[in-house]
Length: 243
Ligand code: RET
Image (cartoon, rainbow, N blue to C red):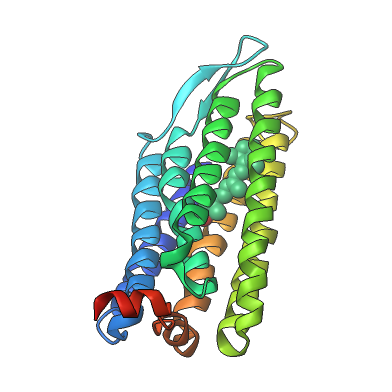
């Protein structure tokens, strides 16, 4: 059964990627990067789902009670690539001047990689260790959320379409991203309260909403993307330096 859900995930990601690619030619030059990033997110997930659906994205590992379970490592490869790109979409929309916030962006991406990295260690370990890694992953995610809310304040101050679209995609992302650690905990990598098919189904729904639903909303708000990318005025010092 879980393989059927993996194929559905694959088809959803392919359709999403094709749709996002179809929007690229008509996108304005100064907001095209949003389209490329979002297309690449869907493409990466499609590859990951294909790997999992064909049995190449998982491996059997031992459980605490001497049984075995499927560990879907392809998820972590996918998330390592796609969650920083999702965050990049979010911060590039929210920040008035990304060029002058490079260290902030780097910190956000690094925290995200720590969150996924600890998750990988948790998911591939047994015993009590996995809960320690789960907790560390949540700590990284909590600090990440705090930093992203800082960007949200800036986006709100920009008003209009940018503030509105930002608010929608951020709310969607915060809600969906918070469910991942719960699925981890109740699934095969945690207590095992739900069966493998339910776990695979839940992750597929979350992934489709967090990537394709997210991209659909973002890329269909052209006005927001345009005003987000219209260059903020350069600081006076920079202008003077060029003369
Ligand atoms: C893990 C491990 C346990 C603790 C936490 C986790 C968070 C995962 C998240 C994943 C987001 C994935 C997305 C995928 C693509 O669409 C790794 C499950 C906090 C937030 C958005």
